[in-house]
Length: 239
Image (cartoon, rainbow, N blue to C red):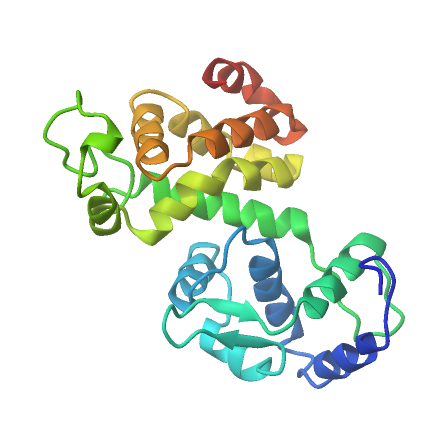
Protein backbone atom coordinates (compact mmCIF):
# COMPACT_ATOMS: atom_id res chain seq x y z
CA UNK A 1 0.00 0.00 0.00
CA UNK A 2 1.35 3.40 -0.99
CA UNK A 3 1.48 6.15 1.61
CA UNK A 4 -0.52 8.35 -0.76
CA UNK A 5 -3.13 5.71 -1.61
CA UNK A 6 -5.91 4.65 0.77
CA UNK A 7 -6.04 1.04 1.84
CA UNK A 8 -8.61 -1.28 3.36
CA UNK A 9 -7.50 -0.32 6.87
CA UNK A 10 -8.68 3.24 6.27
CA UNK A 11 -12.20 2.00 6.87
CA UNK A 12 -11.16 0.79 10.31
CA UNK A 13 -9.67 4.17 11.18
CA UNK A 14 -12.78 5.89 9.85
CA UNK A 15 -14.83 3.84 12.32
CA UNK A 16 -12.48 4.72 15.19
CA UNK A 17 -12.95 8.42 14.50
CA UNK A 18 -16.67 8.04 13.86
CA UNK A 19 -17.14 6.94 17.47
CA UNK A 20 -15.76 10.21 18.84
CA UNK A 21 -18.43 12.52 20.22
CA UNK A 22 -18.84 15.34 17.68
CA UNK A 23 -18.50 18.05 20.33
CA UNK A 24 -15.06 16.69 21.30
CA UNK A 25 -13.81 15.95 17.78
CA UNK A 26 -12.17 19.38 17.12
CA UNK A 27 -10.23 19.03 20.40
CA UNK A 28 -9.15 15.48 19.53
CA UNK A 29 -8.08 16.52 16.03
CA UNK A 30 -6.01 19.40 17.39
CA UNK A 31 -4.19 17.13 19.85
CA UNK A 32 -3.61 14.56 17.11
CA UNK A 33 -2.09 17.33 15.02
CA UNK A 34 0.35 18.14 17.82
CA UNK A 35 1.46 14.50 18.01
CA UNK A 36 1.57 14.12 14.23
CA UNK A 37 3.83 17.16 13.77
CA UNK A 38 6.08 16.46 16.76
CA UNK A 39 9.62 15.69 15.61
CA UNK A 40 10.13 13.13 18.35
CA UNK A 41 7.61 11.41 20.64
CA UNK A 42 6.12 13.67 23.30
CA UNK A 43 5.42 12.50 26.82
CA UNK A 44 1.97 12.93 28.32
CA UNK A 45 3.33 15.81 30.40
CA UNK A 46 4.87 17.39 27.29
CA UNK A 47 1.56 17.27 25.45
CA UNK A 48 -0.31 18.69 28.43
CA UNK A 49 2.24 21.50 28.68
CA UNK A 50 1.87 22.23 24.96
CA UNK A 51 -1.93 22.26 25.26
CA UNK A 52 -1.75 24.62 28.24
CA UNK A 53 0.68 26.93 26.45
CA UNK A 54 -1.59 27.21 23.41
CA UNK A 55 -4.64 27.68 25.68
CA UNK A 56 -6.18 24.58 24.21
CA UNK A 57 -8.54 22.05 25.71
CA UNK A 58 -8.29 18.38 26.51
CA UNK A 59 -5.55 16.31 28.10
CA UNK A 60 -3.10 13.62 27.09
CA UNK A 61 -4.70 11.04 29.36
CA UNK A 62 -8.15 11.70 27.90
CA UNK A 63 -6.78 11.48 24.35
CA UNK A 64 -5.16 8.11 25.03
CA UNK A 65 -8.32 6.85 26.72
CA UNK A 66 -10.52 7.87 23.79
CA UNK A 67 -8.11 6.71 21.07
CA UNK A 68 -6.55 3.75 22.86
CA UNK A 69 -6.95 1.60 19.76
CA UNK A 70 -4.50 3.79 17.82
CA UNK A 71 -2.42 5.46 20.57
CA UNK A 72 -0.52 4.14 23.58
CA UNK A 73 1.63 5.52 26.38
CA UNK A 74 4.93 3.80 27.04
CA UNK A 75 4.85 2.69 30.70
CA UNK A 76 8.53 3.51 31.24
CA UNK A 77 9.21 6.67 29.22
CA UNK A 78 5.60 7.93 29.26
CA UNK A 79 5.96 8.91 25.61
CA UNK A 80 2.80 8.80 23.51
CA UNK A 81 3.19 6.54 20.50
CA UNK A 82 1.09 5.64 17.49
CA UNK A 83 0.31 1.94 17.69
CA UNK A 84 0.91 1.37 13.98
CA UNK A 85 2.50 3.41 11.17
CA UNK A 86 -0.59 2.91 9.01
CA UNK A 87 -2.48 5.35 11.24
CA UNK A 88 0.23 7.97 10.66
CA UNK A 89 -0.08 7.33 6.92
CA UNK A 90 -3.86 7.66 7.23
CA UNK A 91 -3.47 11.08 8.87
CA UNK A 92 -0.87 12.11 6.30
CA UNK A 93 -3.12 11.19 3.38
CA UNK A 94 -5.91 13.30 4.80
CA UNK A 95 -3.50 16.22 5.12
CA UNK A 96 -2.07 15.86 1.62
CA UNK A 97 -5.27 15.34 -0.31
CA UNK A 98 -7.78 17.16 1.85
CA UNK A 99 -9.90 14.12 1.08
CA UNK A 100 -13.12 13.82 3.07
CA UNK A 101 -15.08 10.90 1.74
CA UNK A 102 -17.29 11.16 4.79
CA UNK A 103 -17.94 13.61 7.58
CA UNK A 104 -15.78 11.42 9.80
CA UNK A 105 -12.57 11.81 7.80
CA UNK A 106 -10.25 14.32 9.43
CA UNK A 107 -7.53 16.52 8.02
CA UNK A 108 -4.64 17.72 10.19
CA UNK A 109 -3.85 21.43 9.92
CA UNK A 110 -0.07 21.03 9.92
CA UNK A 111 0.64 24.75 9.56
CA UNK A 112 -1.32 25.41 12.74
CA UNK A 113 0.19 22.43 14.60
CA UNK A 114 3.72 23.48 13.67
CA UNK A 115 2.98 27.07 14.62
CA UNK A 116 1.76 25.90 18.01
CA UNK A 117 4.86 23.73 18.43
CA UNK A 118 7.14 26.61 17.40
CA UNK A 119 5.48 28.93 19.91
CA UNK A 120 5.87 26.29 22.63
CA UNK A 121 9.55 25.78 21.77
CA UNK A 122 10.29 29.51 21.93
CA UNK A 123 8.44 29.68 25.24
CA UNK A 124 10.59 26.85 26.58
CA UNK A 125 13.79 28.52 25.37
CA UNK A 126 12.81 31.77 27.11
CA UNK A 127 11.71 30.18 30.39
CA UNK A 128 13.34 31.87 33.37
CA UNK A 129 13.45 28.63 35.35
CA UNK A 130 14.10 25.94 32.73
CA UNK A 131 15.25 27.88 29.67
CA UNK A 132 18.49 28.93 28.03
CA UNK A 133 21.24 30.14 30.34
CA UNK A 134 24.99 30.57 30.52
CA UNK A 135 27.01 27.41 31.24
CA UNK A 136 23.88 25.35 31.71
CA UNK A 137 25.84 22.16 32.40
CA UNK A 138 28.03 23.89 35.03
CA UNK A 139 31.30 22.94 33.39
CA UNK A 140 34.29 24.20 35.35
CA UNK A 141 36.15 25.67 32.37
CA UNK A 142 35.12 26.68 28.86
CA UNK A 143 38.55 25.57 27.64
CA UNK A 144 37.61 21.89 27.98
CA UNK A 145 36.63 20.00 24.85
CA UNK A 146 33.45 17.95 25.16
CA UNK A 147 35.44 14.73 25.00
CA UNK A 148 37.54 15.90 27.94
CA UNK A 149 34.52 16.03 30.25
CA UNK A 150 34.03 12.46 31.54
CA UNK A 151 30.58 13.04 33.02
CA UNK A 152 29.20 15.22 30.22
CA UNK A 153 26.22 12.99 29.46
CA UNK A 154 25.29 12.86 33.14
CA UNK A 155 25.42 16.66 33.27
CA UNK A 156 23.26 16.93 30.15
CA UNK A 157 20.67 14.60 31.67
CA UNK A 158 20.73 16.48 34.99
CA UNK A 159 20.78 20.10 33.87
CA UNK A 160 19.01 20.21 30.50
CA UNK A 161 15.28 19.50 30.90
CA UNK A 162 13.69 17.27 28.28
CA UNK A 163 11.50 20.07 26.93
CA UNK A 164 14.44 22.45 26.60
CA UNK A 165 16.37 19.80 24.69
CA UNK A 166 13.40 19.26 22.36
CA UNK A 167 13.00 23.00 21.83
CA UNK A 168 16.71 23.49 21.14
CA UNK A 169 16.86 20.72 18.54
CA UNK A 170 13.58 21.30 16.75
CA UNK A 171 12.36 24.91 16.93
CA UNK A 172 13.77 25.97 13.52
CA UNK A 173 12.06 23.05 11.78
CA UNK A 174 8.69 23.93 13.30
CA UNK A 175 9.29 27.53 12.20
CA UNK A 176 9.98 26.33 8.66
CA UNK A 177 6.72 24.33 8.57
CA UNK A 178 4.35 27.02 9.89
CA UNK A 179 2.61 29.63 7.74
CA UNK A 180 3.09 33.38 7.45
CA UNK A 181 0.31 34.12 9.94
CA UNK A 182 2.27 32.30 12.62
CA UNK A 183 5.41 34.06 11.43
CA UNK A 184 3.78 37.39 12.23
CA UNK A 185 2.52 36.15 15.60
CA UNK A 186 5.96 34.92 16.66
CA UNK A 187 8.02 37.72 15.16
CA UNK A 188 9.02 39.33 18.46
CA UNK A 189 9.78 35.98 20.12
CA UNK A 190 11.98 34.98 17.20
CA UNK A 191 13.81 38.29 17.26
CA UNK A 192 14.49 37.77 20.97
CA UNK A 193 15.84 34.23 20.62
CA UNK A 194 18.19 34.88 17.71
CA UNK A 195 19.97 37.73 19.49
CA UNK A 196 23.01 37.46 21.74
CA UNK A 197 23.43 36.10 24.37
CA UNK A 198 20.58 33.62 23.83
CA UNK A 199 22.06 32.41 20.55
CA UNK A 200 25.29 31.51 22.36
CA UNK A 201 23.37 29.67 25.08
CA UNK A 202 21.43 27.78 22.40
CA UNK A 203 24.67 26.82 20.62
CA UNK A 204 26.03 25.50 23.90
CA UNK A 205 23.09 23.10 24.20
CA UNK A 206 23.52 22.01 20.59
CA UNK A 207 27.19 21.32 21.28
CA UNK A 208 26.74 19.17 24.38
CA UNK A 209 23.77 17.25 22.93
CA UNK A 210 25.44 16.53 19.59
CA UNK A 211 22.91 18.68 17.75
CA UNK A 212 25.13 21.20 15.95
CA UNK A 213 24.51 19.87 12.45
CA UNK A 214 20.79 19.63 13.10
CA UNK A 215 20.85 23.24 14.26
CA UNK A 216 22.58 24.31 11.05
CA UNK A 217 20.06 22.40 8.92
CA UNK A 218 17.19 23.89 10.89
CA UNK A 219 18.42 27.44 10.42
CA UNK A 220 18.79 26.87 6.69
CA UNK A 221 15.21 25.59 6.49
CA UNK A 222 13.84 28.46 8.59
CA UNK A 223 15.79 31.13 6.72
CA UNK A 224 14.42 29.95 3.38
CA UNK A 225 10.82 29.88 4.56
CA UNK A 226 8.49 32.77 3.84
CA UNK A 227 7.04 32.68 7.36
CA UNK A 228 10.21 34.33 8.68
CA UNK A 229 11.02 36.49 5.68
CA UNK A 230 11.00 39.59 7.84
CA UNK A 231 13.87 38.13 9.86
CA UNK A 232 15.80 36.74 6.91
CA UNK A 233 18.82 38.96 7.53
CA UNK A 234 19.07 37.84 11.15
CA UNK A 235 18.83 34.18 10.15
CA UNK A 236 21.40 34.73 7.42
CA UNK A 237 23.89 36.04 9.97
CA UNK A 238 23.26 33.05 12.24
CA UNK A 239 23.97 30.69 9.36
